[in-house]
Image 1 (tube, rainbow, N blue to C red):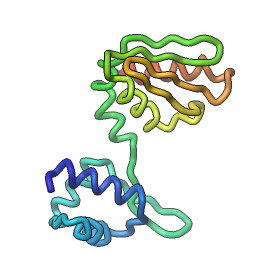
Image 2 (spheres, rainbow, N blue to C red):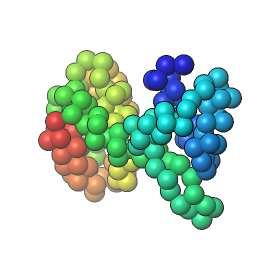
Image 3 (cartoon, one colour):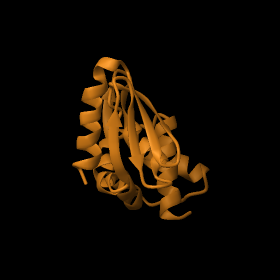
Image 4 (cartoon, helix red, strand yellow):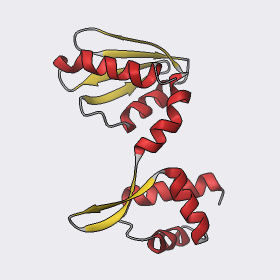
Length: 149
């Protein structure tokens, strides 16, 4: 299993199962045919921005998109050509073939005022939770995507 495949598996496991220890995560990986040392697992978790969180049911590992967002912001921002809105919707124009990547980047940020995104080839439609939030979301997107380049 390559590093990329292993890290994808780690993200998938943490997103779908409650993982309470590195040993627990290592066992999940072994079941998928990946033998990994504790040191490698620690490095992968750090690279992926995995964090320990404590909730009402105890502690577990969780993916932290903020780390991913900081790394990807300049790359994704370079794919954005323009951002425009009307009273109700926001359209993000991208380079050809880049819309799905930009839409995923927007979704990963989990900005509460955004209901969702729809991506074409070079256009992302951003749907605000309410029309009253359109202007605020457009400003957020410009800051997040264009100014963050």
